[in-house]
Amino acid sequence: MSFNIAIDGPAGAGKSTIAKTVAKELGFIYVDTGAMYRAIALFLIRNDIDASEIDRIEEVLDEINITIEYENNAQLVMLNGENVNSYIRTEKVGIMTSAVSTHACVRNKLLQLQRQLAETSDVLMDGRDIGTCVLPNADLKIYLTASSRTRAERRWKELTERGVECDINQIEKDIIDRDNQDMNREIAPLKQADDAVLVDTSNMNIEEVVAHLIALVNEKKA
Ligand code: DC
Image 1 (spheres, helix red, strand yellow):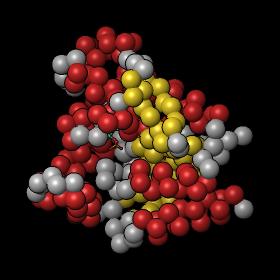
Image 2 (cartoon, rainbow, N blue to C red):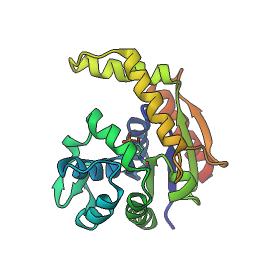
Image 3 (cartoon, rainbow, N blue to C red):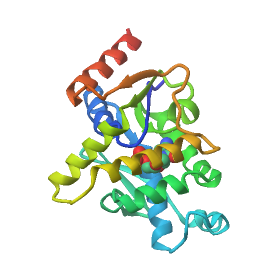
Image 4 (cartoon, helix red, strand yellow):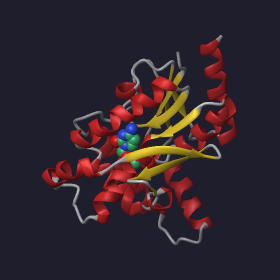
């Protein structure tokens, strides 16, 4: 039987950084489900299909093949055989992804793939609906969050360090809009599962969060 860890939380809470590090320390496979949704959004952008065109999206879903590969422990998201990791992290793709992931047909397509991955390996999977929907029987569920201001500050710092000019208030507004969209959608909205442990990282650094999560895993395994 595989041991499964679900990490959910809003955009910018540090899920992927934390999840990657914890998975590496535990020797688990890290599955970034947001990247899978992003790859679908990228396909739609490339084909000039808007998030509101539900009929067209349903039509083209069969043409979209998403698979996951691993290279030096890093997850590669393959879109019809192409590694799209370097194209899916833009704000444009992020906003499109949040809109596209509201559609049931899109979610159903990825649900099966995500469950298959968890059946066969010890996984640490992060997203919005992992504990509530994808892996309701996960051995450990974490809800990782931070205040919208803290999340905006982290994003601002990351962009500024890369030389990108940006406005922190606009970043915070985008984060709040994204939270609203992810939390208020009809299907699989972002919410803390009843049996998830809440971890607010507003006043914690990465090392502290990682250590806290490893301790929670060890408690569960004991
Ligand atoms: O984690 P992320 O920022 O890469 O996710 C991008 C979008 O994908 C997010 O706004 C909502 C959607 N998503 C989802 O609906 N369900 C998931 N399990 C993961 C992501």
